[in-house]
Length: 509
Image (cartoon, rainbow, N blue to C red; front, side):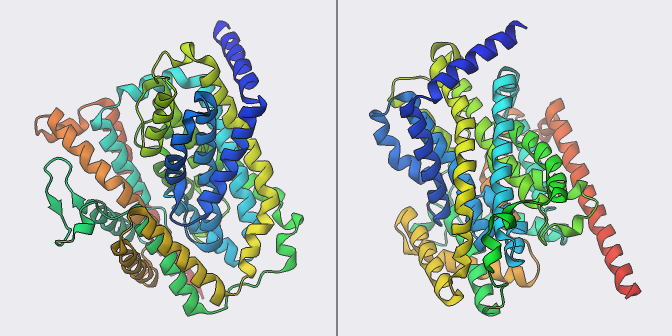
């Protein structure tokens, strides 16, 4: 009872802080900036936050963190806009949204898909906020007890789950994961300084950029496919952008409620673990829903659950990622490291004492998440018609313009023409994958998690003095690896059962 009273009092402090006019302005500016940054190919939240970081000298710690956090989760939703409408993910977490979001757009349901995405983001973020408020202490203790052994097991689980998120062959998914890992380890080995797979190119010493990979595998391949198809996409009718076209039917709402709740739980837990975050949360949530579905063949063809699950999971993970950042001082990503930088610039040190020493900052930020999610919901729904009208632009005009933005985004990361050529090369790889039904989404996750997998494996080997038994040496890692084996076997069985059903249906016809 005392804990509940303290919690209500703390939330009251946070609400009073968040609704101050100056802080509320920062929430709105952050969310709006994040949406537009997420829509622009190749920019991303981290770029916007890095550019704004020097300005936080003048904003104060609370307002600065509220602004940067708004950009962070606003950009995640902004990335889903291009993922759904153009099959170009704004962030790694949005790549899985392409799988069902873009097919819905091709069916003339782009506005409905965007409304489902923003509503799922709001509900997922709300669950994440409740997790922070109610369970921050135990989650922080769990996260603190995770070592490289547990993180290695968790990443393996994510990679295996990623291989099963398409309705095609699981082995094709695994192959794309391996290819993604191969691209991820290009560059300089941080431990030895040895240059790997650079082929003597100085531009590849720093590795392949995520922008080049995602823009090539998704963006350029989509452009090639669209040019091949010509103007055979479904025409956008005037009714497609009317309010009634954006409102989900009652059956649609029933279909997505349970996936949103399950995915929000997955995202809330994984987001609190440093180094996992929204990407792995989105992939695992999608894989879970596809395996639980009685009609898994709908996934990849425009299933609403395929949008609701990853969007709610990545938003919940965006919120709970602040737990290790603020309470433990452990940034789980480069973006979270910039958040810590904003605190340090303003003379505030993250750590276990932050909640007691800076209650207005901590609880003001927590409440700002909910207010920001509400602002995101209110601002995004009226703009759905604007985004969908992008599809009214003729294909010969739209696709070259998108290609220009892709090249600018790839070049702007390091100022290297090599990155632009990589976009072209990876675009051909992505298009070849489409022709032979190899999913592109596992490629992205393999690229992101591959270096982390290698890093945690090497650390685990140091802990175990070269003994592979250390990987199952703790109950947590053993359970996670057992779960990984079950997911792999489930994927094989589901694929076999799907092929049997297809064979029977073909024979019946």
